[in-house]
Length: 135
Figure 1 (cartoon, rainbow, N blue to C red):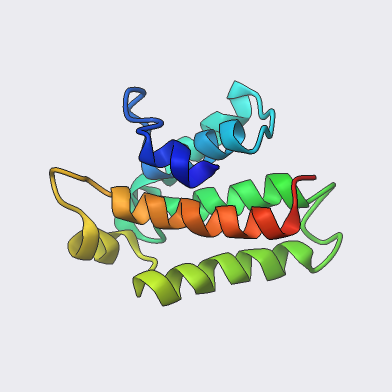
Figure 2 (cartoon, one colour):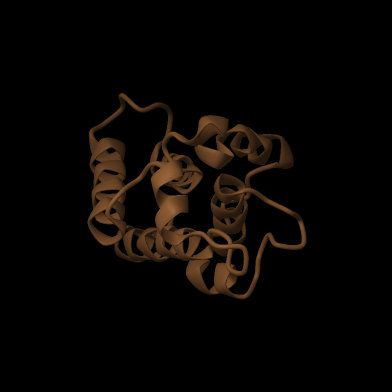
């Protein structure tokens, strides 16, 4: 779903950052029906919130999980915390780190940019969504 969409180049022509690619791509792949105004919220999370802190794929992924699995707010149940914990821990286990600066140093180059990082986040989100279903 999302991984295939990203691998096929989704977001490249639109010049989306990593957080935007995850949120916009998930919106399309999972038929989330988020309006354009909601999608714009991901803009400031690219590049590790502009300071190379937590990678935008992490923050974008948490936005996706929140949109899919929260009805009203984060305190309604422990479900969102468990899902985001799984997402972040799985990403960390498979990539080694979550900070933008470290991920860029290890995985980014001018040819593929941050695609390996973006694809990994999409793959992990697909696994979670496949198991949890779409609400």
